[in-house]
Image (cartoon, rainbow over all chains, first blue to last red; front, side, top):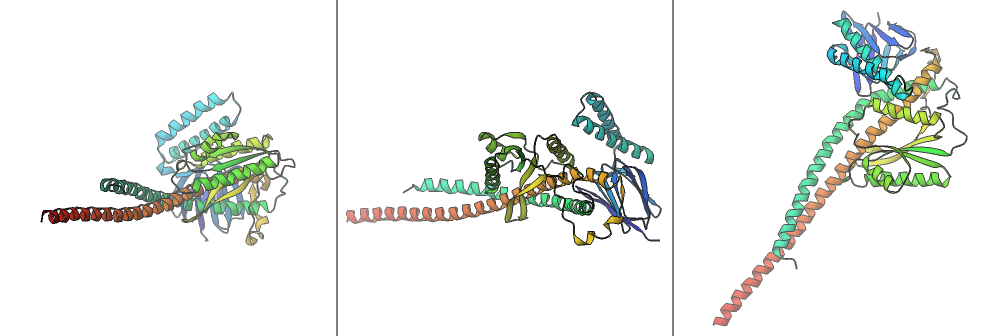
Length: 136
Length: 290
């Protein structure tokens, strides 16, 4: 079986660059899975959990917005930010979520950029907390 | 002729200055390495991004998105301009400000309004003093800038562009070509020029399966493309600043050394002259006693 090559790239540097067996990523149209010999594929990425399997080792990380490209058994994920789930501090993540919730409630009246920003922040925070909960 | 003590004092002062410039040189060198590392880390992202966007752009209609379409009437332009927050970096700030001012004058000559968004204290001070119209200015943000800040900037530009408050957006930053060569560069941000596609991406591209459709994806990628460009400018400008300061301070240290040497020469000559004069006195006195 041909193996996949996964690359997670952010503006701060390359986070993951290794061979894996399968990848599941949060696309704009819902989660999608990638196995070897996948068709050429491009998708937007929304904040959520990105999982991959390498042998019996499971990997998980939280990503924000960006996009993914699958070509020739190479999965390139380009996102604004990403962190390994194991490195997330659950308490801080939860605090961030609460903060985002409150901001969102406050900004609801003013329908401008700040609202969109707060919403994005909340989505990111929720994705983080969920990912941590699952592994815990 | 200056007295011996004056010369000594001057030598001391120059030596002090030399110490400072040498320290600044070393600080700039370490900062340069640091930011260069950041730039290298950003490179894979930017490179990959340009490739995907290029291949996507080659197969969609360029008229699809307002960010890609050139406006027919251009009466208001915006400029995003980068300078350093601090001086003492040679001709770095002067160069980029000169390029920007010349460009603004050209725009005015074509009867276009020009609004400025300034990054860096030096540019802000300069343009504020001369009464240019400034939309926003950011100071002391080099080093702490991250992609979300840049995204916010991009959103503001795009917002103004789409609501016809501005018709074209440009940016001027100092591109890093090497430790001894940096160059102010003008780039058009809006309307967006999709990156040129390489030949190899031309074939096979059409087989891509896209979610949510090529056009939909393009809509998401275009603002990102702008952010990538701006972020790149931030990094390049910062690296250029440090490189420029390093060279300037290196020169200053060398000049200080030369100055100390010359002054020491003058001091020794003066000392010798004084000794000779004293000797002549003594000899003259002894001669008179005979």
